[in-house]
Amino acid sequence: MTNKLRWFAALSFLCAVVLLVGCRQSFAPEKDAELVQTQDAQEGREEKQPAAAPSAGEHAAEPAEEAPLEEGVEEPLPEAPANPVDLDYYFMGSLYGMGDNPSFSSLFDAPDGLSRLKEFYGELNKTFDRVEYHPQSLEYVGTYTGDVKFSANGSVNGMGDDNNCHTQLKTLMIGKSIYGAFDNVVEIGSNFQEEDFQVEAVTDVIPVILGYDYLEIYDVGDMLALSLHTQPLTFQVIGFLQKNAVLQFNMDIPLDQHIIVPFYDIAYEPTDDVNAYYQEIYYSQKCEGFVSIDSTADAEQMFQDVQALAEQYDLLFAVTPVKLNVSDTLHVQVFPSDASKYVSKHGISSDSKTAGNAL
Image (tube, rainbow, N blue to C red; front, side, top):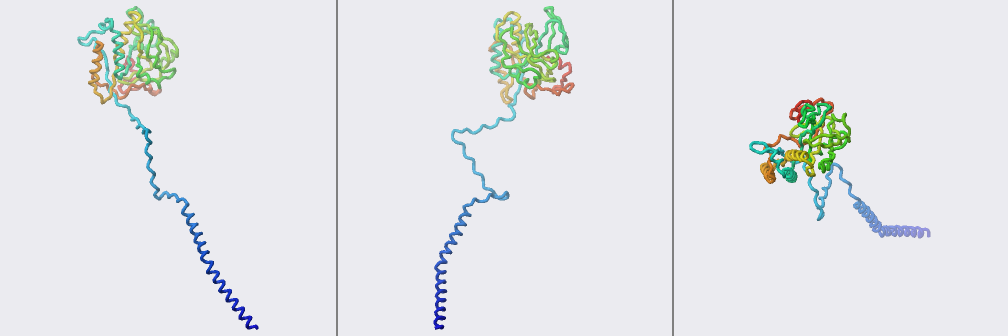
């Protein structure tokens, strides 16, 4: 009995071992498949992660090309050149009284002389680029008690044909095309405005800017009764220039002791013989000045065009066919206030008699 029990126990153990091995063999493929699926899933998640950015030493991907402009969208214009077009300048003057030419009196005696001058002047400005400035003294009529340094000729109270004392004052008339050069050199008050360059009546008040040395004598708003070509006129101070302001172009003009006047147009007919004479002289000066052209342009053609225009109005004006020695456009420069004098590019010092008598 005991032996039978031992044999049965051994047989049961053997069956259990066989059963256990069979179970392991039947379940192992599923476990392996599950493990493979888990590994595949992990590898898949790793592949979906973004690639790391290349380090500074590694080659980065080339940037994409810029997309072409959409149809109808204009490309931006190129920047303008830093330097303006080079200009050449020539002086234009009258030929009256030269050689066998008649004098100005023949023009002024003609009934249409003034109208021809005004029309010619208007066409000049429409056709050509011009620089207008003219040293022309205003006169103080009566006994002048001011400083002689303001005199244009170094003297005061000269006796005139009218038995009155006349003192010529340093004055500079500037055209509408260049008054912007004074924008940054006005110490007190204001610069001219475009409307200041036309006078509608002989009684109009004409604005003026005074040089720095007048600052202790006058104030903004003061009225000045002065004469131009024998015509009494009224002027009003609108500003004062900075100290040591100098106009520089074909010559240097220190402005501390000057009266600056707009080279205005006269938009009315002469009121009397005195006014007619004033306008005739005035417009004969306005027709002079400087003509500028592109340095690559045909200067000879410009000379001929000016001459043809003058002949059209039966006038004697022409451009001198000699280019001016000008290295820059007209401008006004302020020199250091602590400088007792300056020496210009033309060798003129501010305290010299030559500079003082530039007008």
